[in-house]
Length: 289
Image (cartoon, rainbow, N blue to C red; front, top):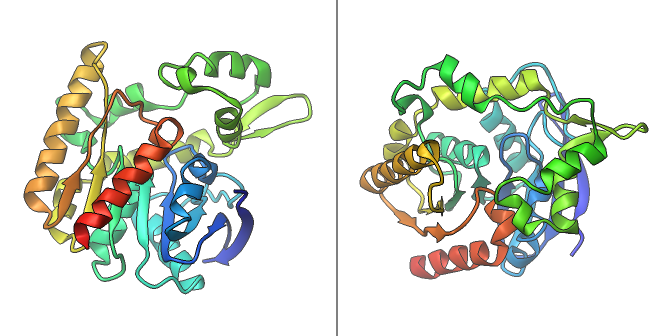
């Protein structure tokens, strides 16, 4: 199924979104940091059997406008509110991946009557600043984006095909989705749609966000879909420990949370496990009926 590429003028900016159609409840898909709406290519057609599926390219990403400011959660969720209102979507469901899950959680916590349910896909629950010694300076050191601007396309692809985890599922679809994160010049050099400067502004907002303070304000049912894999080093061991603690905190403080762990799964769940992701959402909704 090929989505329609659409544009909307919202809040003085031009936003791009993909519309996979469907005639059911409206469902808005939110991509992660430095990603784009095409990451939902494999799962959106499955969801469109039950929902009206739309995927927004958030500011700074994909073909959407790229202002120099507005990368805090208040502004990003304001963009989402404007998108929902412009399309007259009544209490849509939100499915967010990675940073997109953080956006979805922030939106639903601050607008408890605006969302019917949430699905947070390997994101939305970690509180980065709560990690031991995770100062902003340490966060910058560990999580800053690699310097990809100006890299030759073939050089990039040679490395990308061997990325841990993603390399094992690499195919033409995955390559198309990954390359949609970049502008490719005539001389075949790549340039991320999300600039390094804007990337770091979002990273700062992630570091400052405290999901632990948001869970008590959530009123809609929420499905958490964390990815799990055997830790290969001390860093991933610590990451998994904090992920489990953060999810336990969500279960304790949010009124209606269900957790479905996807074992032996990489962070890019929509690329590796699209059918399992759809089935987890279906099972969650059956439990609400």
